[in-house]
Image 1 (cartoon, one colour):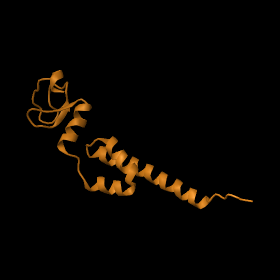
Image 2: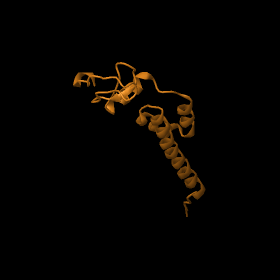
Image 3: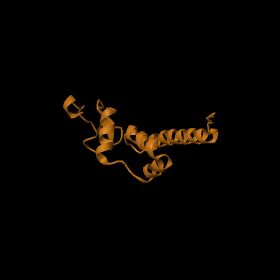
Image 4: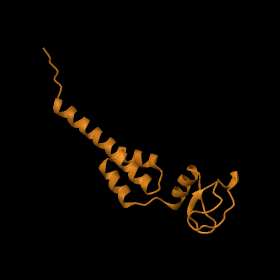
Length: 108
């Protein structure tokens, strides 16, 4: 007669690892978003690597192209006078106080 047993300790360990990777993914996503990067890539990286992914994102910096792409997706464009990110519909830059022409659809 054959009996099968389930190793409860092994299943518990797997659950802990999965929870750790999901928590790391949310931490990495939040960290990368606060640095101005795209949070979706950070979520995937940390979901795969766990806490190591969070450490990598804590050390790294998003590139200028990634920051600009995320800013454009949020409706922000650089001010032509001071280069700070402003709303594409702004008529006056809140940073330098100078008048700006609103961006056209091709500039977004």
